[in-house]
Every structure is written in C-alpha cells, then in structure tokens.
Image 1: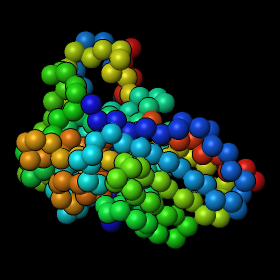
Image 2 (image 1 turned 180 degrees about the vertical axis):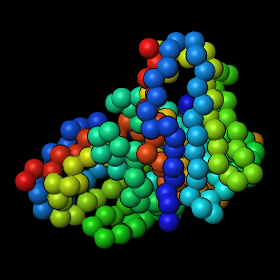
Image 3 (image 1 turned 135 degrees about the vertical axis):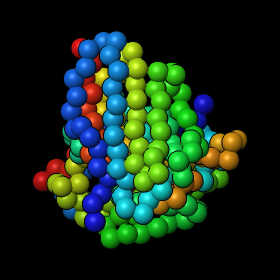
Image 4 (image 1 turned 120 degrees about the horizontal axis):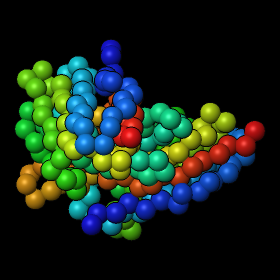
Amino acid sequence: QKEVEQNSGPLSVPEGAIASLNCTYSDRGSQSFFWYRQYSGKSPELIMSIYSNGDKEDGRFTAQLNKASQYVSLLIRDSQPSDSATYLCAVISPNSGGGADGLTFGKGTHLIIQP
Amino acid sequence: DAGVTQSPTHLIKTRGQQVTLRCSPISGHKSVSWYQQVLGQGPQFIFQYYEKEERGRGNFPDRFSARQFPNYSSELNVNALLLGDSALYLCASSLVGLGTEAFFGQGTRLTVV
C-alpha cells in the first residue's frame, strides 16, 4: 500500500514569515513529487514539481526532496494571506505493467496565514 | 490557451442510476487521469489513459469505467451509483504519461441521493 503522510494542521503562520510544509512517502520506488494548492471548493493547482534530491526554487516557493529519508517539503517565503489554503503533497510511482498508478496524494495540510 | 475542461460542473443522481462525466485535456496533452476526492481527503486515483490506452487503474470497483477518444478527450462512467460515490471528480491532463506534471480541471461535483 503506497502512502503519503502529511500533518493535517491547521498550521498557522504570521504574515511575512516562512511556512514549512512536510510530507513523507512509503514507496521507495517513487520517482516524481509534486505540491498542489487547493482552495476550499476548488480543484488542486500545481505549485511545484521536483524529481531529484535537493532544492528547487520558484519565486517564493522552494521544494526540497530527500529520497534517502523519503521526505519532501515545501517552504513558502514571505507568506501572504492569499497563501491560506490546503497544500497537497503527491507522488508518482511506476507500476509493474509499464505504466503508472497515478498520483498518490496525502490528505493535505491546512495552512492559515494570519494578517 | 484553454485549460482542462470538465462537464458538467454539478450533478445530482439517484442511487442505482448511471452517470457519465466528460473531460477535455489541455491542447497537445495526450494523457488523462481521473480522481475522486471526498471531503477532507486528498484525491484518490481512479484511471490513467495515455494515447487512448489504459495505463493505470486505482482500487475502485468495476462499476467505474473510462475511455479516451482519438481527440484525447475522456469519459468516466459510474454504474449502479451508491451514496458513497458522492464526491468531487477531478480530471487531470499531462503532456505525456508517466510521472509528468498533471493539471486539473475544475471538477464535477456529484451528489447521489
């Protein structure tokens, strides 16, 4: 059973501070890692993808991947009230049939940015 | 460019009925995946299609089926609806199949009564 674990929160962060979101996954064969943002009542929106160990930065967002520890994180710098949302961690693992079993999601972390 | 489009946006069905949900991927994308999201949970993978062939299937009963058409659009069918099928059904498209970035449509909110 492939699992992705996230702290459901809520995680409350003051405006302007750094928000740190964490995720662990169970399948060592996982190859692709993603962070999605989901506002209440809306569909998930892709924020970051990361495929190799290390950091990847895009604007105020930094994704970090450590495959040895099976750990993925997302840092949001200069947090804004508009960043308040649920953040979903997702991984992809290949299946034995030469395809992929799609994205396996965590339950998401509810982030609240306090003005 | 148009993103992923799904129809209908909302749907109410009665237990035992059948439903068909539709999805058009981003232009140029050849892979479509379907997900079910119930309140408070992350989306759960149902199917992935790439180049009109099924490439992955999640842990859903045979009441769920899907197909992809030559223009890469897709349909998800659910037969013999149960109350527990009430959820947000999401379609995602990817440029190619395995492991690439997936972009979601706005979803179809299905309510089974």
